[in-house]
Image (cartoon, rainbow, N blue to C red):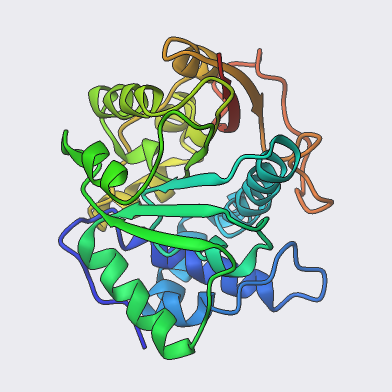
Length: 282
């Protein structure tokens, strides 16, 4: 079964990510196992992966989501197991399958936020596979660009007075500056002190580097234009009340023996970069 198209041009990128997870799951040295990924990706997802890799040539668009997936897997589980958090929110969850493939502590409440058509198609694949979640999974059908989505989350049972861990993965790159800060502001109002936040973001150098232009153009042709980047992810989250750690793929904690090249120090300008951000609410 394939996931049907959506009117949102960014939503189909989740099929590309699912294809990357499916391919990783076939490796003997895989960093995670995602049995649902191939069905969720469908032929279109694998076609996306092939096109993006051809456009990016040696920059490895299939490896980045693999490193990112494992990095945030570890982050989410650590927040729950070491801090006792039992509320997990996946903003723009797309075709994420963490509810099914990770071993969550008992009583974990996991909320998936995304467009109705995305979650409906995803649930059809999951039902056909007979998969069962390893937590209490709640799907919240919302558009994160709208102002009233927090109400839907609260209605689904989320308790803002209790600590939580949030993940915003693969989304901010496609939003405008105003939308990024509007989203982070709402997340901050919904989180108690001691809560955790994970997100990934690109730097502004990505928009000006000839190395990245083929891939940026390939995304734009499919309606998924990149809009947002920052060279200071620490400041991005700090102004919304978060104490932040930033890791680049390939650095310690985000290498897993797979990243093929050393990371250049951040002080070197003009280099396209991606940042894996983890933060705690202060």
